[in-house]
Image 1 (tube, helix red, strand yellow):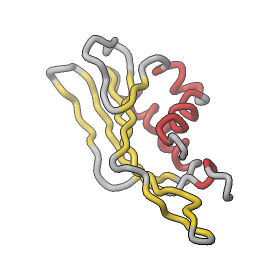
Image 2: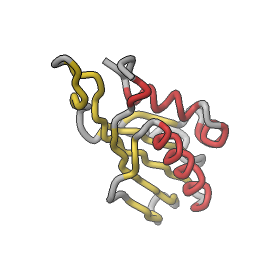
Image 3: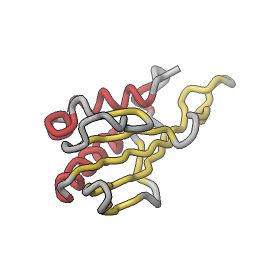
Image 4: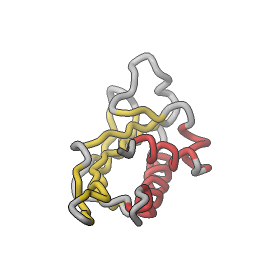
Length: 129
């Protein structure tokens, strides 16, 4: 079994733009209330459990994954820049952006939020291909 969230996180940490702005502030599923929210941060969540997708000899070789990546920061264009890097990294993993998401500014938190959903078959993570 592949830990898809950890694999995505590791790919994000290989990206200089994401690493320089979000290192130490990329979390799974939620962002702690006590964490530093004055700097950009990311939340990576599975939208559903990975499911078997590609079979060979009656054995699943690849799982279909659906993830959501939220980027929050006080600078709107920085949020877009980071999310652009996210999109490219996931595309390289064969995980593409889906319809839906969120592009908002919240007065209460004084932060811009760009939340996007991605899904696909990350073949490169599996030995079968």
